[in-house]
Image (cartoon, rainbow, N blue to C red):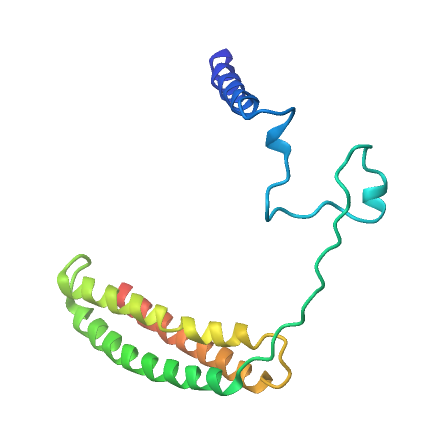
Length: 163
């Protein structure tokens, strides 16, 4: 057990040495551009003296209105891509029905199933882009329903391949 303590001690020593070489009292604690701002309000009041001043948080910008025609076109394109990929996957799984795991027909079916699973991603992306949009609620529901239906088909084909 005492042998485990030495590597930890060595690692901490090396980290402290790296901080000490940068100059200044505590250079590793300096604010890095892009880091979160210090707390404001009651938390800032209890901060020790000499703490950095409070910086006001940037104003919250509401999400932009989604481009419904573009998202609808993307959903239509995703449906077409899914249908093409599903046909290829069904053919590959049917061809692999008599193949053993690891044979070329089985590997081809696995590849097609991976493509089929990836083809469902645009449905989730469209639904996510419409999150919180009242005007796109129907389109979001359609995208979520398509994704659920396609993932069920994927699961059915995956089960058929694994038999």
